[in-house]
Length: 213
Image (cartoon, rainbow, N blue to C red; front, side, top):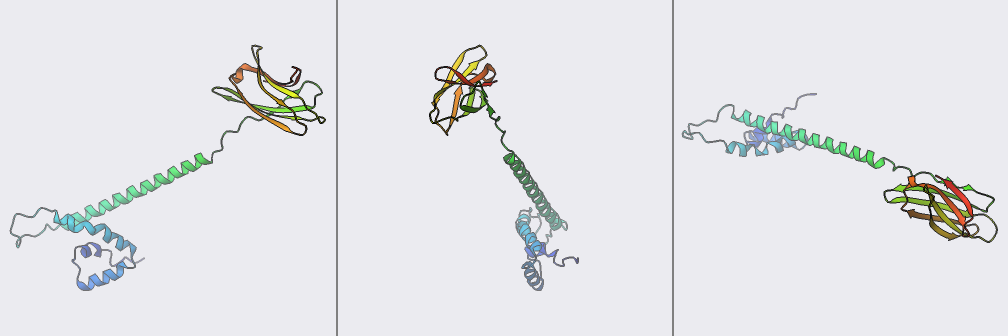
């Protein structure tokens, strides 16, 4: 790839040091060269930097700028450009990393709840149920589905929690309806480790189903 013949025109253009012919050629080149156009934009403040240089303490007609002044200012401007580009690139990389991390966190599935467990029948009864226990800081949540599977009439049922010390707590009551599933979600202050069993009973107290914990 041939070197851009206008690569060194940027500073002279900004300082107004190009001949009219070279200035016209360079301005036509700027319309199609993004790199030179960006360089001119970066050097736009160069005249201001030069204007802040202390004036020499000699008559103006005898004063001449140090021969290394323009190269020194150009090096300062171009060094600042490289630093800005490096900071921009680093910021973009950090932003991409943050987005990737966010995508990984967002795509992680939530922990699956414990599965429901079928309660054990304690005899030949026309009822079945599945229950799941979720532990919380305040106690235990019981999520149960209960179906009545026999005849056209149902019965009244109780859900009872049995603690390890033998005490019993009635959690819920409901009436079974044929061909219908009752969903019971109820909480108890009893901690999961303190429970020994759940039972579905008739209103008379007869145990029908049991989940041993």
